[in-house]
Length: 199
Length: 180
Image 1: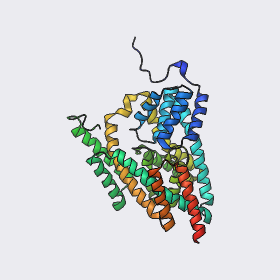
Image 2: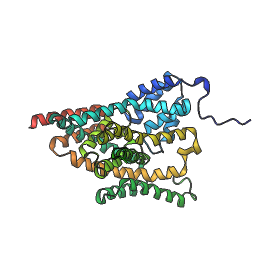
Image 3: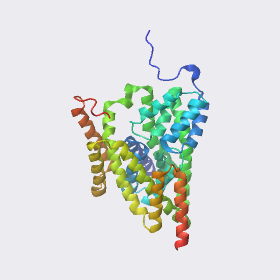
Image 4: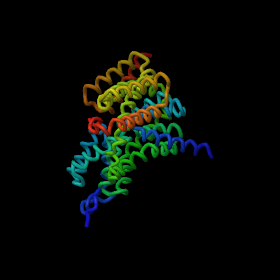
C-alpha cells in the first residue's frame, strides 16, 4: 500500500479549532514589525509554547509563500492553518489573525472621516504623513536591494518608474507586462541554462 | 443594477486584482491602490491615502489592511467589507493551495519567472508613489524635517513604525501650534 502524501498533521497533535482561533487572535493583535516580527511570534507561541508545529514548518511556510502574490504575513498564517486543520483551519487562522487589525483599521477609518478636517487633527496628520514619506523611502530601498539582482530587473524597475511618472501608464499593466516579459525570457533562455535564472 | 451594489462590486474586484499583483510582499499593493483609489476612481485623496498607509504601518498585521480604510471611505461599512474580502481572499486561497501541495504551486517555474520580473517593476512603481506622496505632504520646513528624521530613524534603528508615526504626528501638531 502506498503512503499518501502527508500535507497535514497526524490526528493526535491537531489542536481544536477554538484553541487555534484564540491563539491566532492573540498573534494577530501582537503582529507588529512585519515578517521578522511575525516569525519570532510564531516560533515562540506555536512551536515553543504550544508545540503544534516545528520551527521547520514555520520556516517552510515563509519560504513557500514568499513567491506568491499577496501579503506574506497573512499567507504564512493561512499556510499554517492548512497544516494544522486543513480548510477549516485556513478560515479560522486567517480570520482570527486579521480580525484585530481589520477592526482597528475600521475604527481609524470612522475616526478619520469624522475628525480629519479639524485643525489640530489636520496638523498632526501632516506630521504623520511626512513620517510616512521617510518610511516608504526606506521600504522601497530595502525592497529594491532584495529584488533588483541583475540588469533585466534594473531595467524593469527604471522603465516602470518612468512610465508611471512620465506617461501615467496604469501600474497594474506595468506589473503584468514586466512579469510576462520575464516569463518569455525564462522560456527562451531557461531550458538551455536552467540554473542561470536561479540565484 | 443599484449603484450601491455596483460600487461594492467594483471595490471587491479592484482590490482582488490588486492583491494578485502584489509580488514582493504587502507594500507592493501601495502604488496600485494609490492609482485606483485616488486618480482612477476618486474614492479618496492623496492625503487620506497617505494617512491610510501610515495607519497600516502603525497597527499590527500587514499594510494591506489599508484596503479596509479605503473601502470605508469609499462606501461605509459595506464598502470596507467588500474591499477587505477582495484584498485577502485570493492570496489566502493561493497560500492554502500551496500548503496543500497543489502541483507545488509556490515552486512553479513560471510563477517564479513572473515574480522575478514583476517584483522589480513594483520597486519602480514604489519610487513613483514615493514621489507622488512626497510632493503632496512635504510642503514646508517642518514636514521636510520630519520626513528626513523618519527616514534616518528607520534606516539606522529598529524603531517600531507605531512610535515613529506617533512621533511624527506629535511634531506636526507642535509645529503648527508654534508656527501659527
